[in-house]
Length: 249
Image (cartoon, rainbow, N blue to C red; front, side, top):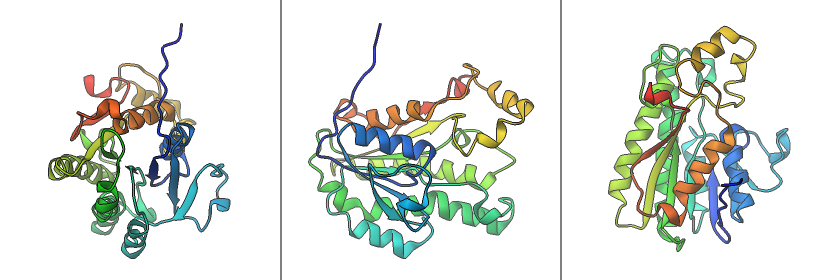
């Protein structure tokens, strides 16, 4: 028995920040597989600098804290149907996020860059004729909802990105632009890979969720595509948790 679904994004334009690995790459791959023209960003100089196959996408180098580069990218877009703000990282520049410098760097990387790119892309999004309206999907985190003592800057920035999602959804409700978020739980990505050699650490995290397993990047990507398609045209200002029941416990 099969109950799978398919998406059709033929002739649409999609921008996925941080689309060179992990969740971002899965999202970009899913959109491309559904017929979209996809651009991904990464911090390296070219697509060839990555081990990941990026041949299905256009590539733009982008550091989210480089305001001039963010503005330049937004100005080049023309028409944009879907923007996925996925780029982000913890411990920026190896800094302790409890230090003022580390905290500030995390905010700049994980929320300020996304805010700048999104607002600068407003005209390109408003020009979209995609059924259901243009879509912005912000990738937040379970740390948007619960505290962490390890990466407080990352947690605070993701909580701010969730608040920005709701504010932009209201601000742009009459512009034909929907703004939502996905909130992944513990997903099997390069960011979480360092846990695997330490079963006690991984098991402790898995014990915090109902399903007791890591999620896949494809499961997160499916939520992003749903929030971007016509079937979700009455959905804006919300966050879809892809968390294995983490928030239910």
